[in-house]
Image (tube, rainbow, N blue to C red; front, side, top):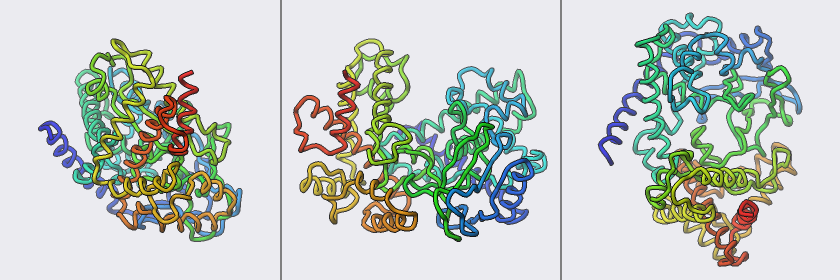
Length: 504
């Protein structure tokens, strides 16, 4: 490791310790968590919102905090309505503070492009103010009483745990996040020398990192794709879309309305889906991964700089985006009301094609770049001992059925189909769906009950990236007619169809 990386890790550990202390400072004293939740629910209700009395907040479980059904909840029953005025968003904070306008005037903030720079600065200053004097945040005190930094995120993992991700984009992303947070914070605090506000003075590096990770892991997409932090809604945990309990949407007034998909029995946890995401995407945004048999597609990312330095030294990447992304099509048996199954693969390929058009110097073809990226990950993960058992299981299953992509089970694996599993789930009610998922989980070699939570997450992320690379490699070979369709994974054949259309 370079000395700069070692220093960064040491710095990271220091801030993590401070984060723990801040979290303790936030949680110590005052009413217990259930009382704080009730105060927050009453606050929402008193400001024009609705929180069903059938919701109960439970903390200190194996999964952390969650909402459960205090009574039976009927199918279609509304359980939450959070008014637009109680949602923390870029638009709402600009009505309360001049700090966002000040942040807008600071050049070259890395988080400025993602639309979170102003929100992160404002939340950081409010958090600092709250820690000094809870009453200083005014009517927002009930929300801050429930606030806790997301220490389960990869950014806050111990170094030895982070190192298990080596080879994946997500490992580099942790390192990059620390660098950019530090750089942006220095720019923000330096701006105080010429124009400063009391709000900016309340910020410190630790709170700035904490709120950035909180926005990443707790915010929902609102109008214009900008992040919205929505009280109480943020406590709902994730299950994949075919097993989650709730529907939610923004109404014409900008209020978030949440209702039950089906009947939810008393004492059962209430869940939502955080969206149709691959396991690398779930890890990057929320710090966990889904069971592989419920993962809707595979994806991978790589820094453009890595490609230029290792494979395309004649390519000028100055005007290109910082990373390259590939994704396979969604499972075609998923509900079709979101978009066509090929959309995610089609979108990533068109974006990559557009980025190549911005490149200068000797620019590779789309097909060449796709194959290079695929080869890069296949080469790396073929030597990764951490997933060797699961690669071997995949090869064993493909020896029996070349179209199989099953790596997480060996028993009856050659006939297992993710497409058919997703289709079957949709014919069942809530209880039967959960029973079927539990049965599949018992056969899952990557289940957290076998490997532990973090090891399970790392394996699932790396295998998603490996299979994405394998699908694109086989897709390229299919297009060149160097591989027979009968020898390719089902996902490779569908990826090849999408790639052909983009090339045309």
